[in-house]
Image (cartoon, rainbow, N blue to C red):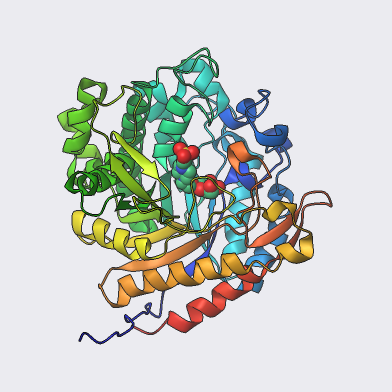
Length: 484
Ligand code: GBH
């Protein structure tokens, strides 16, 4: 009989752990000190797009409360804080020939200095979905390769120059979401879709693939600028953050379902990661999409290939996958398969949360780390997001919200799964940032879904109250750090 030994779990002594947020979700200050609108400022004003008609105009008001945010991070014991820059706060019109807003820029300069003074490492995302609105209006935003790539590279250079003390940069957060949710589903800004009941514009069969392609080239260009002009002096590193969940076959005995599991990950992750590591798209995508999937010129392929100093991983959950026998719909973006919460026998992949797409399944974290490690040649990993909502949380009184045992269990099981991947499988994970430091603007779901480890009282001056999970994360890490 095989003995049932619990797997080893541990993390290195210098492991960086902390919390993550994004500019439009927390900052507010939508017009403060000369900030220009982003596509999200415009999109949230369209009736019916956001739950409760919410916007990020005020959000957590972090633009005026950086001191409170830093105090909170200190109190929780965080070693690192991942936040994003609002491009249109720094360059209100966005373009390379448009003026820089010195006040907006100085906000980030001071914030980085204050974080460093507090002993917290700033992990900076250049782009978390909030394209300057003017660039969308001027030339179609992401759809215009020459303009978008040049404008993004210029913006990146402005930030590298202004923040020489930052050593950890992320170019894009989850380009999948900008492309698929913004140009196929139409649920995210700028809301393009083929569904004419939702939007007058958009072609969901082609635009997401074009948008993804241009984001990859913009990423490659920004990395080139960083490596040529900044990396050495700063002693820094740069990478892209990709979202992706684990997959299990709907029918474990079906070879087709098992193949569909890999295909799902390829459509979600390898769409971006294969070009970044290999310089070309996955075969499964080329096969299904044909020439709707753009191709790289030799020069573009060389630019994008090898452009990650580290792999930024956002990971939340898992799904059961069932293959489809029929020919792929031109609007399909998942790999011609069904994404399910239950398997053939009616087993749920995990408990329900407030987010329809999210059911926790912690073993999938270790499995996906192994999948990525194998395919991409053992990269350095940073987990740049991981977290959960709770079913019905927003309807509870505050005292109960603060006792978020479900979220504590989520973090305990997911961090343990990651620590097993490190200690047992030798995967090089160097940092982990929980999503999110505090409740915030949850995109199309407005403020109805809370992802924070800290409760934000939107009714009473955005006051912050740490939930149980906020304080438990430190204990969970203390148990593993220094144990490998
Ligand atoms: C993250 O994305 C974001 O980076 C962050 O801003 C956000 O607040 C956080 O999640 C919580 O939602 O609607 O069925 O097509 C998570 C990855 C990928 C999850 C796309 C939702 C859409 C599923 N997201 N997915 S569906």
